[in-house]
Image (cartoon, rainbow, N blue to C red; front, side, top):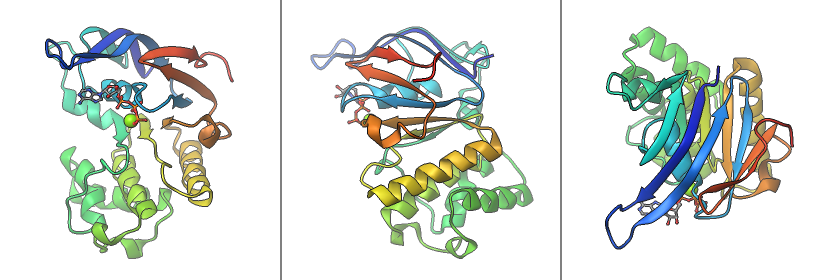
Amino acid sequence: MAIIELKNVNFRYGSGTPFEKQALHDISLSIEPGDFLGIIGHTGSGKSTLIRHFNGLLRPDSGQVLVNGDDIWTASKDIRSIRFQIGLVFQYPETQIFEDTVAQDIAYGPRNMGLDEKEVELRVHEALQFVGLNDSYLERNPFRLSGGELRRVAIAGVIAMRPQVLILDEPTAGLDPEGRNKILNELEQFRRESGTAIVLVSHSMEDIAEHVRNVLVLDHGKIALDGTTSAV
Ligand code: ATP
Ligand code: MG
C-alpha cells in the first residue's frame, strides 16, 4: 500500500482575494515504501506547496490526501500524528531552531510524540550519527553552527521521529559540490540502513539525479513528467 497518495489535488493561495493564485492543478501521485523520489521544478513551480500537502500543513481545495490508505482530512484523523509519520525538513533558512542546544533541538520532535526521556535520548544519539555529527555537537548552540551543520541538525530532528517517509525541501541549496554530495550520501546511507522512503525536492535535476531512483517534474503547479512508476 502507498504511504502517501494524492488524488486530483487542487490548491489555490488567497482564495477570493486579488492575489488568488492556483498553485497546484489536479495532482495525483503516490509514494511507496522504499521509494527514493526526486521532485524537480523551477522556482515557483509549486514544490514546497506540494510537499506541505503530504503531512497536512496545507489542505487541498479539492481532491484527497491519503496516508496509509486513510484520508487525512476526515474528521476523525489526528493531523498531529500524521506529522510524526511524514517527516518534513523545511527549505533552508525556513528551518526554525529555537532551543539552546543541539540536543534539545533534536529532542523536540520525539518529546512531542510523548516518548519517555530514555527513548528520546537514544533517538537523539541515533539521529546525530545518521547525519554524520558526533556527540561533541550535543551541547553546542545551534546559532553558532555552519549552514551545513545546521541543516544536519534539522534533518536529525526529523529522523529522530522515525518517520515512514523523510521529505527534504532543497536540502543541498547553497552548499558547494562537496557539501552537497556529503549530505546526499549520508541520506542514501540512512535510507539503506533504516528502510525509510525519501523524497528530495530540488530545482536542479543535476544536483540529485545520480542519487534518486525516480523523478517527478513539476511545472506551473502541474505534473509535467511522472517517473514514479518507471525508473528514469
Ligand atoms: P522555490 O524553488 O523557489 O522554493 P517552489 O517550487 O517551492 O519554489 P512554492 O513555494 O510552492 O514554489 O510556490 C508556488 C507558487 O505559489 C508561487 O507562484 C508562489 O509565489 C506562490 N505562493 C507560495 N506561497 C504563497 C503564499 N503563502 N501566499 C501566496 N502565494 C504563495
Ligand atoms: Mg520551495
